[in-house]
Amino acid sequence: MPIGPLVDEHRLIERLNVVMKRELERMKAGGKLDERAVDVAVDFMRTYAEGLHHGKEEGILFKTLGGKPMSAEHRRVMAELVEEHAYLRNRVTQLAAAKELHVEGSSEALHKVIQMIAELIGFYPTHMEKEERGFFAAAMGYLTGEEKVRMLEEMREFDRRLIHDKYRYLVEGMERDYGGRAGMC
Image (tube, rainbow, N blue to C red; front, side, top):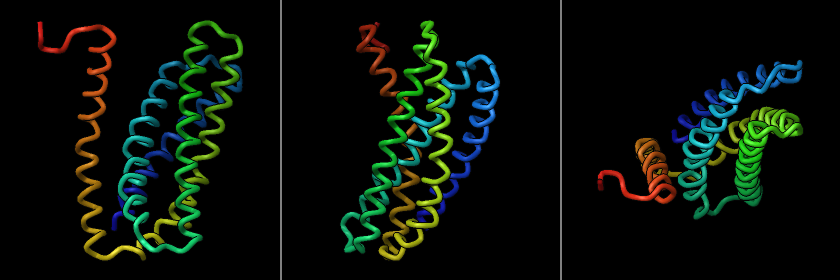
């Protein structure tokens, strides 16, 4: 079933959530901001949660379902999930920006980092439960066996390309920012 890999990915996101909850508690107890922990969490959320996971949900599952005659309720839930993905992207962007402000010496930035981490770790479990218990299984009822097999293959190919795309975009950005093209000395 195409939802199998998506549910597996939720388990890894949950593991990060546990780590970030511990980091949040440490910061609230007066600990310093661990900039590396925030950088790693932001990279994970942007690459794995957003790029890989939400990319497959929206670009493969939801796209396929969008052409199906779905119930109004399921269509509404799917639209809500897309909105929730946008909300999560926004919070990750705010977390990254707050961390940068902290590095630059802003006294208010730590509070914003704490707020964004709290929102993210509070929101993800509800969002994932909504997908797993309220949408994924029902969504499979709209697909034929052939569509499910094709979707799994699309997801595997999506996974395979993701890391290559990420680092190609990174190098292209560096070429724009710093001039030249790699290998063209």
